[in-house]
Image (cartoon, rainbow, N blue to C red; front, side):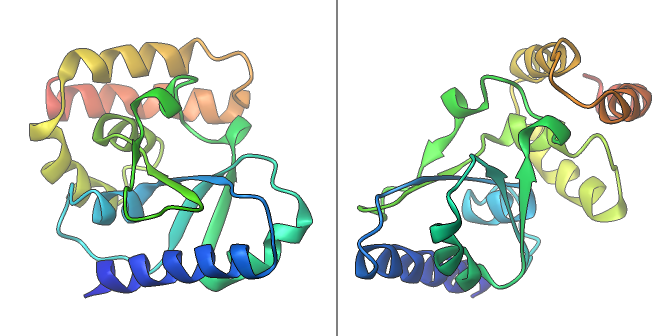
Length: 168
């Protein structure tokens, strides 16, 4: 039900984009919403996290339809520089380009927090992940020079717990 509601809201965003004659745009959804849309997990969520691609202010009237959303700046988000290459485009959208991050990218992005809801998601995601891809993404994140140092340091600290718990 919640998944269907999110799809409906994304379709409304597509219609508003057309209505205001705005250029089509890409949106890369991360976190719990990506898990729900990609059916990586069974946990429902109402918030939508997506990567800030430097959208012009005029797109604010489109994003407001998401209601509870976080536009995450790349420099402070645990993402591999190659996340777009692994993202899956949702085919039901014809005007805007809606992508969800791969299960491996979502899994690695959750390491920095490892909150109870993240652990719940990881229990469902990790068994379906390719461990070689997980390790590649971890290395790419650690080697990022544009990631805020405080974020990288927290990621590295939690990485040991993640590796031990999930044998990665």
